Image (cartoon, rainbow, N blue to C red; front, side, top):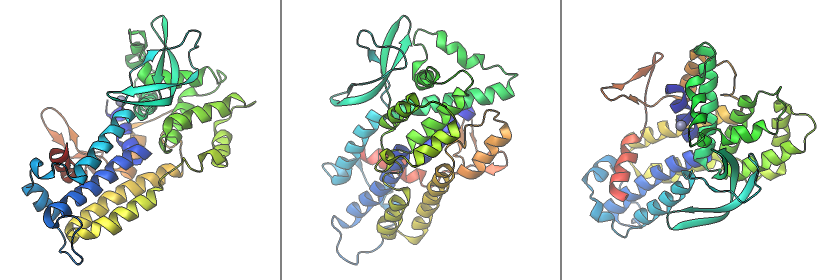
Length: 344
Ligand SMILES: [Zn+2]
């Protein structure tokens, strides 16, 4: 569904991991281009690189054992943790909705003390790692549900039916359900889920951020979302976690240090790309509940598209270049795809 996937696009653009991925790939593309054209480190006063031409003419073999390839590998490992979503068996006596620290293994790599949430699957309780993917899906599901409720005669059955499946749909609802057991019935749990997921995604480690927020929630006498969020703004815990590294610094380094190494025309395209990230981040940093309205109309979606842009929508038979009268556009995509061809 378009709204669900569109939420993922915005999350990628603005969440700490998503924007780190995009900015790191853009940096690596320039790094790879300089390396191929001039060697590394390049001599002082070297000519600006025509990046598209250089990457087009490059081959995978040329990057064997290179720094860009090693950094790309490190980056892919980080990404595999961000995308992990396999549940594991919970220790005896764990109750659904509890937050538990446990080991997370992904392929040959493992992290101890990773934040997990307990969820019911069939008759069992399992632990789901609170990775970026899990936070992405919990948020997107509730936005999608709100959109369906408003636009489909209050019927969200198409997604709710998933809960009856053997997988219990836990990837999509585990955080929502953990909030549900902590909030009074009168609270709009979807709104809380969307807002807290959004806040967590703006942190360096969404899992620990979510864990911290739920700890705070447990001790509260009244649960009002607005005052809860205001209190988070004054909470020292977030100091080293929230918006780290600051989006502004990451963008400045990319444009200032790396953008000047490529032709002005390409640097301009890179700036367009960084503008998109900056505009989107500013919109969400100013309002974590931006996507949490409970009556989401197509017009609201249009407002998001106007703010965050929209990449071209690829159908099996055609690519759509326009949504709601706004041209779709994904700056810098060619370079990112080409980089993946060369370094993976
Ligand atoms: Zn999804």
